[in-house]
Length: 147
Image (tube, rainbow, N blue to C red; front, side, top):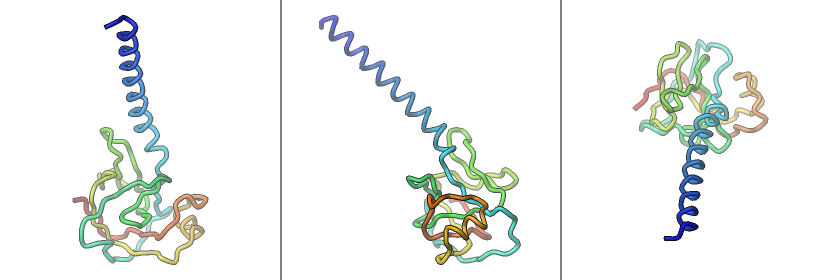
């Protein structure tokens, strides 16, 4: 094998390693900053009590960084937040207790807010999403169970 070929192979390996490291680093840093965890801006004393599904459903993040379960955009209870815990995007409650990881399957209570406009969601969450997270909303209330 010629020295030119060896150099090209070496450069290819270094570029591959460099690109893989950059992808991993930016994914961990950018995922958290680009996720829109919509929460109530105030504590709620009443909530709807339907189940989104009787079977556990996966929590996912869509291309706009909006958290979904099935086709629903999720409005989480007051004080919930998303953190990076052991390289996992983790949702915690208002006391910092584990609720679920992105990718986990959960059963949640609450109710569909089918007629809710982006203006209404902005009002209850205090977050102006500029139509970034539109769709049918599910407002979590009561039960949240990670499977």
